[in-house]
Image 1: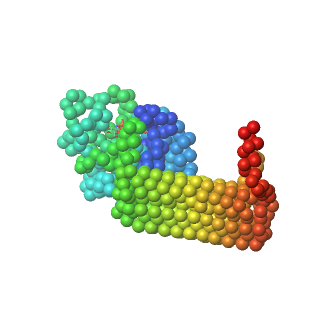
Image 2 (image 1 turned 30 degrees about the vertical axis):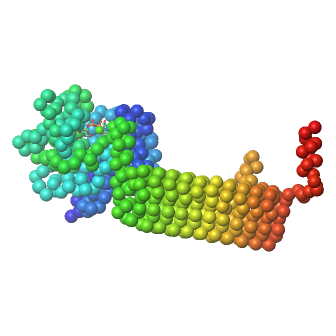
Image 3 (image 1 turned 90 degrees about the vertical axis):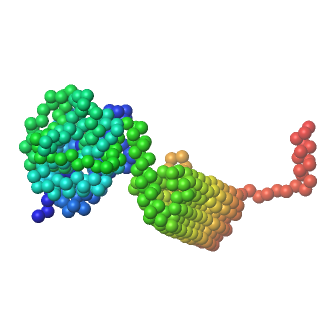
Length: 468
Ligand code: UD1
Ligand code: CA
């Protein structure tokens, strides 16, 4: 029969040492809340081990922010929240979970995890679970590891059958020398948790209810020692966050390289964990790729480009020093150098956006070209139209935004403005230097500039008049 497991993630703590206002569990690491790394690892583990699972997140400090996180979560239905009213220790946090989510008491197993360890993977959970599952009379396992700097961790003190965990504050001189420490990750038979959780007291130096008291030397429990501390590296300070953030990003670029993405300087790029990049793509040094950005196959991203929450389709090229946010760039289009695509920019296949061009909330069709020094806002530009240097859509009248529509195969000369709302048809032509305020029909020629007067020999006379 399928076994069931309750995954309890402790996230009620304040994270005092972070010195930030928001709950530590929501701090972003490589663009993703710390809490989500543990949720992901736990979900992978329960799928791999064919366990029926539910996730319970214990919240407390600034709980409204975590409720908001839950409200918008893709896996919302698998996640439940429990409220620890006062932060009286890790055992009290688990009690709060069983109080708010009593059905967690019926699961075969209970896994307890901290919310601040983004390097944790399903691999560690699997290993821990297999030890518990394969030894019939064991009631609980804790993940431990050895470290030369055990300060701050609970020490593992082995006994005849089991082991106990002694917190730094409560440890005597000999216990402090112990190098095997508690990672804070446990899997237990729920029946064991139910029978001992209420007996845990707070008679210790911190006056807190310690979850570590679920393990005692006379219980059938085991500390499962892992070779490396890395997966358990917890974040308590902003300095630790910066260090682990870097490790997470490095792991990300390595995995992208193994999928065929070429980085000219992998140590000098900032890629968020949820960014996807297809094989054959080349990333030059100094690029920042953030959020939900999706870059398809065979794309070129030149140096110092910033891309956030955007989609770049196969074969497109983003040339150096461009800035893209909330944009879509279709197949074989070219952007930049030094272009800016703002939210809602939709650049068609084989289209071209050149240097010092800003595009906002505008759709350019296949092969459209805006090559130099332009602002395109709230506009539509049809197939193969060519927009000359220095064109401006005057989309804002000081109160409202208006649309500009330009058809297909239309030519706009250099240094023109279109005062929106306005429509310029297909196969139309606008003469350079025009300020267009009236619609131009299909095939129409628009010119809007004052007539030129040329006076023979006038240059000399003009200068002379100035000198007197
Ligand atoms: C804990 C362990 C310690 C272990 C270390 C590993 C205890 C008593 N000690 O210590 O043996 O080596 O983790 O990192 O468990 N939390 C709540 N409610 C509370 C208190 C804490 O939800 O009332 C949450 C925190 O948000 C955090 C987790 O529990 O996610 C761990 O709490 P923390 O205070 O960081 O425990 P440590 O002192 O690090
Ligand atoms: Ca901690």
